[in-house]
Length: 196
Image (cartoon, rainbow, N blue to C red; front, side, top):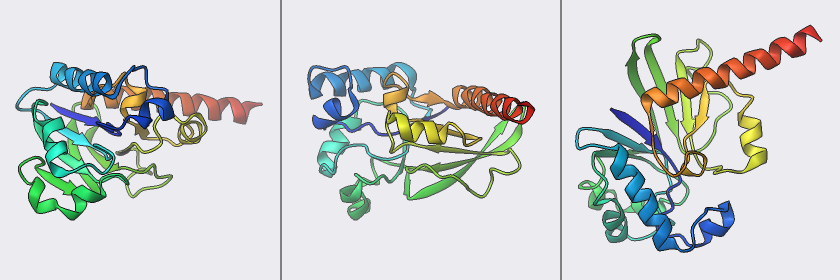
């Protein structure tokens, strides 16, 4: 199974206050995220982390944070992953691949071939969104109400950051279900706007 997440911010105490995360300490936050991921992921699963594993912590600390989370890990660099970007040769044992962006093709029984545009940052337009066969997944904006409101009007996209999903990764099937709900709400809103 394929899973997606973003904005873990392991070891980052200020993120608790910044995003209103419901934890009394950074250790509690880190443990909850790790436990939630261990509960969902197996050794044969792929986890795409769309940026901000930590707040520019050392490779050794990143390795320590991720060692108990099963599955193959893929990293799309975020703005707080600069140290990992500079030391890519040292993280080959942690991540199967690292990139700034990636188009991941997935076969879906209902939709056929779907291209997932994976990027840390939210995009208003990307190469595959006009035909409905492209889905943009992102993070970066955490649970910021204004920025998430803007993105709620963009079809075929979803913020997969842990702050919005109870600190757990989303499976590809959950993403597709959320996209259907998201796009239906946009369509209904447009219908209502045009009929008034």
